[in-house]
Image (cartoon, rainbow, N blue to C red; front, side):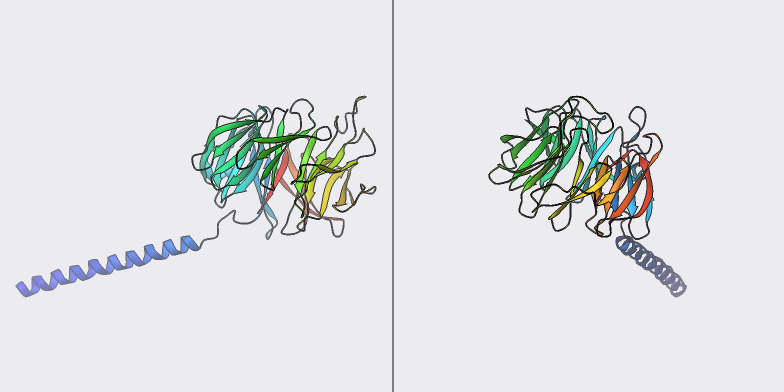
Length: 362
């Protein structure tokens, strides 16, 4: 009898350990498979779509280069809540996506590969752009005429840097200095604020052309600023001024080139630079123009004729293509057109969210 009970007990123990072993192996396999799963947004192109100005929400569209397919509102789909109004720009830094939401006065922070929300930066008035300084610190330009200094570990604002100028916009890090273009906000400005990235102190304010709208850094660490001039394309005014392309030595902070555009009724917009940091591209007179940083004068002929208004442009370092954002009528979904600057041809186009503007290439 004892032997039979012992045998039964041993059978039960054996069955238990068999089930336990299978469960452990199955769980381990699942974990291993999960780790090996490709991240949905590991590589591709992000398009920041502002959304309707009055009653809509901004979205982030994602374009997969390999499949040539696009997906809209990846943030809302992943997190189950809207991004907010209006999505202005996005930057990826240290594995996190920092999405600046202008009207909502915040920066949404998400994992750059899954787009799962990891936090939010609040306490902003009208934020425009994010710039990562180091692993612990970032800057956010704000139309309150300040640059907010953010602790990236806690997503909190530690201090603000007054620019003493109107409408701080895009920022660029060069030679341990941050160059902030001041476009004027609801008015007109014509300055670049230079900040020491280590001390957060303003070093200098540089006078440039009216309404700076684009900034890039070339291979020699020179800072290039596109000034669109007073006025807007399609709405000519008697007091409009011409645009200027300006080059600043990031070491001495001296202007080394100031190239004026030929008319005051047509305004250059956007400024891109290629992988070699030697050629720049911009939109002017319904065309995409090319400029070599060694040139001493502006190009007179468009590289690509587009006959469209593109409020946003981007250069994809993976393909060398120029991406142009078409908002259509600012109500329906927009489009993105891809151009090959080497062949000066249109490659293709794809649909995105409402009012596409800024790009981020990963």
